[in-house]
Image 1 (cartoon, rainbow, N blue to C red):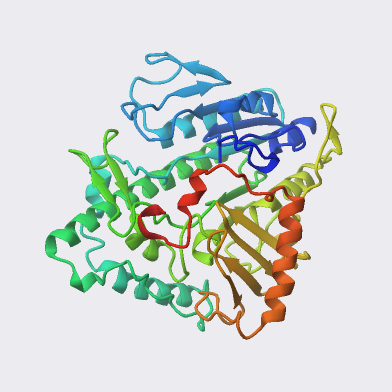
Image 2: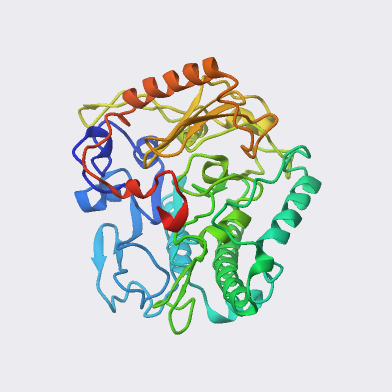
Length: 440
């Protein structure tokens, strides 16, 4: 989504009619920092330092994990760091480097006696997956039971933990994904190696987050720091059912490892579909919130439905900030989300609807009714998520009036939010057609 395709909604960068969390919180007296991915139009001049971030460390290129990853470099406060720059170590791993600078930025905010806002945008576990060999080795053999058996085990555990309602069914295995029992021993070993790399990448990130938390604790600011931890999408099916395991040493900076569609079915248990699609497997992820000073029932589970768009109103409320109607002489579009602060006390969130569109795929949710579409030319599917969270039973033919009503709401939103008109040029999103095969 970083190409300029000639329409207002697809220009490939942040326009002047929106503000970032950095801009809003900086205006409220916060020290603002970002460490990691900045994926909103750097190629077109939309740099963090110009959009409200006091400090920034960002990766260029298409991401990666090691200093020998091709076409991966860093920018500190908008200035490119040349190879050998003393401001970063000679050898680094992206997850650790981002964490190191995040802690450094926090220390600067404390020295300036300012409250801080930090966006720590890890590359992990984005493909191509890369992790230290000794960490990959820890997980080798853990996935030889295969995706079929492990999906059953995970759903059982999710139900036991109370995360998933007992009436939720396991979505069917995609037609393109083979039964694990049909694979040869060599194929199973290869797939195990892929998933072990994914697990190592995640575990390394988990360790880094623990290091960040300990840094906050040792500085005496953990209890009054609100931490939001989430992923922006479900598991990725890109590279198709076979995934990818390339390179002399899979997991190294010169290798390329993708989980692919087969393992994504496990990652998204019990949901249907994957990243890029607007079915639950693509858009539904957990959110963990940690704030000892403001959330008293630690470990409690909330079932309210939130959305990425809710972070702006949430942070505005928590920081006592003001969302502007104008900024730098430009009119600013109103906030789209709702504050999540009521959820901290398990109160409901009131909203009319939630909308999605990504690379031609679309969805709208009103209450427990969800209308979802595969590709720009796909047929609308209708699901009652109160009884069918895995989106197995399409009710569109049985409830045509509901389809008509919800699709009209989506069309109105799509025009207002500049999703429509779609660009006439072809863009990478055309891969997201009515098939999940081979990353289409």
